[in-house]
Length: 296
Image: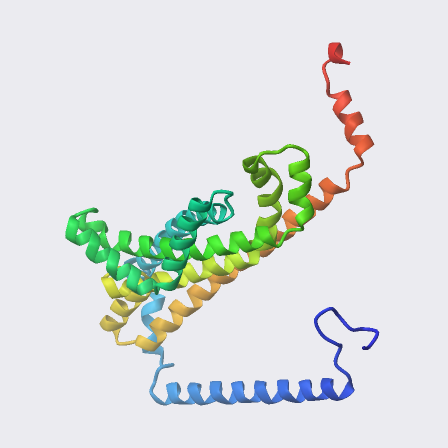
């Protein structure tokens, strides 16, 4: 094993590095060739003509189609993500419960709804809400989209939470029990703060999935951004430019979400290091200095 070997693999040698460079160059060349072919085909069909893109220079297109669809997309995504985080926390902690019946119920819920496709959940809840009049007709599609996204993503987030807590060193749990902490206190004060930092990339990835899956609401009549863009393109006859604009908007939103999560994860890690770096003697001195005069 080489001196620069890591835990997972050996550092590539000269031949492997050369092979990796050749593979990367070939792959990039293939991608560029495919992109050039697609651009040529689109240009040959006048998809880059000025009149195809002119509607997006008008405020009426954005105020009448793009912005309302974007608002509905973000509304469904934000509500479903918040509810999925709450549901995932409850189910994840339930799967770690000391009571067998709680673990069985939480595990059954997670395994069932994690295995059902999101679109089927949306369609099923749409028919269920419509059949029994659970929600007003004006909010039927929105409620079905949010419910489907919440059930699926909440189940996935529960598994992320459970795996994040289980990945922590066993000494954390043993030390908490030795200090006499209850299970709820140990979970809230010791395990969850550390697990959330480790789980942040996976949680953000699932949030991005929820944002993209909101487009499935198009099937049940929810006017999200893709449906709104297609309505705009049906009026102006510019389907490819409309979908291209939607793609750019979604990429920017997802990139912003991922960047925020990366910043938040780094901030949490730095904050935890600062707390761990505090000298116990300094902490005791600071605590004594903040005590009332008569208590010293």
